Image 1: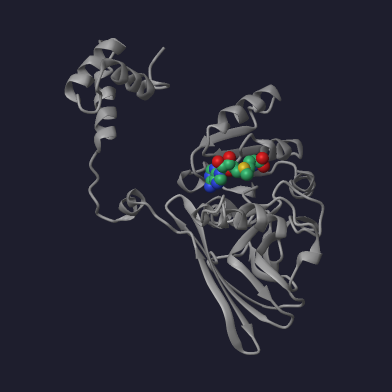
Image 2 (image 1 turned 135 degrees about the horizontal axis):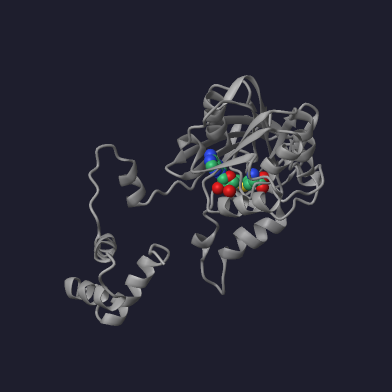
Length: 360
Ligand SMILES: C[S@@+](CC[C@H](N)C(=O)[O-])C[C@H]1O[C@@H](n2cnc3c(N)ncnc32)[C@H](O)[C@@H]1O
């Protein structure tokens, strides 16, 4: 937060209009106000926006900050702004959708010549030995009381390492795989390539990903293991199995990043070559879309309610100010006796569905 504060105080001029994308509890908006901004549009899609409003009120900032609830790409602002500020950097750099949100914000919200904060984001990869991570998350599942539990290995797309001890775990020199300047980019990079020359023998457990961001001229933020630890730590893209690499091996990496509906996915492929011959390769692909997600994405698909949806629909339409909870539950159970075997289960469902939706 120190770096953001420094960057905001350098960038914001008295009278600026600002847009905060993903305002969360509002801290960046408040700092912009403190730095002299005249008007701030704070956009946040989560319910945390309610807290942000309260905190703004508590600190006498309500008149300066206008809150918008929703995803920034769905919001229209009343005017263009001098500065777009955001903190959408994920541990893997881009996995909180920073590119998509900022490309849209630059095009629709920013005045010509306005400032994007952060200004840029560089992503780095380096193959590492991560013994502790490997033991706890991967090899532990190889043999649980004599049983093969490997399906329990993490399926998430990028994992945080608690803390990489130091750069002595690096098996090669880090490579920059992406460099985006938010004030000028036009396209979102999805496909990254890197080649590494292995500098020492050792077990290769995964690719460590970290970022370096220039927030504003001369103000940098990084989660590189080289710098003091941040809450981001680093992202590890694990190997499928441990690979014993040797000095001078060549490691070829391809990383694809993509969004499917609201989820962010990575797919990474590694090939290890020794003296021109491939000695190991794997693709780690966690993209497993469930049936519902596939249907949601299919153009022209005509959705219909399932049993849960029908029950919810019925409860909502029966709740019209003329019936008690019990009466709604009785009608629901009569209509759907197989789903609700007794009145108690119907009543429980009615209260669950209506929770937070009824007038006091
Ligand atoms: C990492 S938090 C940052 C919160 C706050 N800006 C801060 O610095 O503490 C990211 C927040 O942005 C929100 N968010 C992410 N992308 C968004 C977008 N495009 N539009 C609106 N909200 C977004 C999320 O709901 C989340 O609350």
